[in-house]
Image (cartoon, rainbow, N blue to C red; front, side):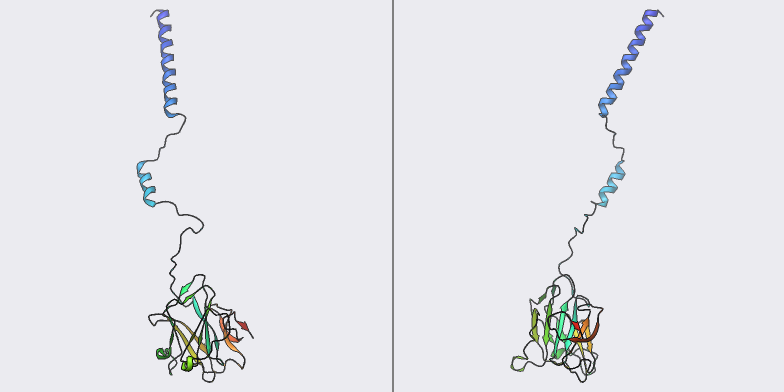
Length: 218
């Protein structure tokens, strides 16, 4: 081949290679292409979005009453009142719930004398409700002067001599809480209260009467 012709062909080959390299660079624009396969993308989509942090989920506001969300908290054998407290962190609707003493056998609630909470009885967290025993004749006994949100009169009483078992029942009649007052457990001027106050796992001991307020051990 003629030396001049060979030089011309070599120059043409170099120009073609440079042009091809420039075209590839412009096509990708310096961005690494996404190599994720379609199956992986479909799997990620099926899993749904990632959960939001910091407790973004909103719990159901209608919380059922349980043994630990509302508790029988204090009993006064002398003045025959029973105190309950909302021990949870959410408002509790106790409309239709009942408080009863026990039948003579002591094992079952005496529904005929139970007091039923009226519609709209809602307890805010740490709120108190008093059930004042001693009968309904003449409008019933006066409620104690305390910090309770509600006070209802009841037909039944609390016997210091023989003791009492008290029941908290839901609207269906199921027992959701109990408290036992042993015979003569509290001396004159004392009540029988849960310590620590409002703690579902607390223990009943002689306390200073504090209707509608935190219990104080003697």
